[in-house]
Length: 134
Image 1 (cartoon, helix red, strand yellow):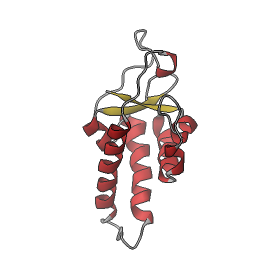
Image 2: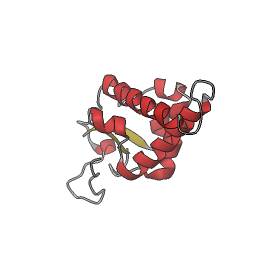
Image 3: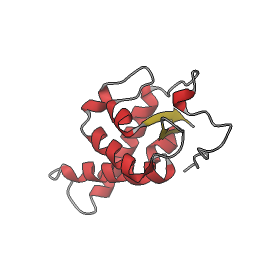
């Protein structure tokens, strides 16, 4: 996982203040989600049957987002597709709580389909985050 730059760095321009900010493609975001989902299915097999217990992979996905986004700003899928999720306002990590919130809202699917011009879904706006290229 890559380290997120220090939000107090004077050279860092947060996405909210950067007029040239260009979000990564939907394809890269979707690719990261597919990779994360496959990993969640594999992890859920440890304690449940993902076919009959549909809640298990969803729970793993929410916990994965909380842990990885909160601490590293990238899930394993995001690392592979070279994107990261950072705070919209300062460009730093979003923290575990906001990572859990983002994962929970993403699990509902509908918020992710409603995006603004910066490709921020409702789950991104509610958690104060944005997906950027690495």
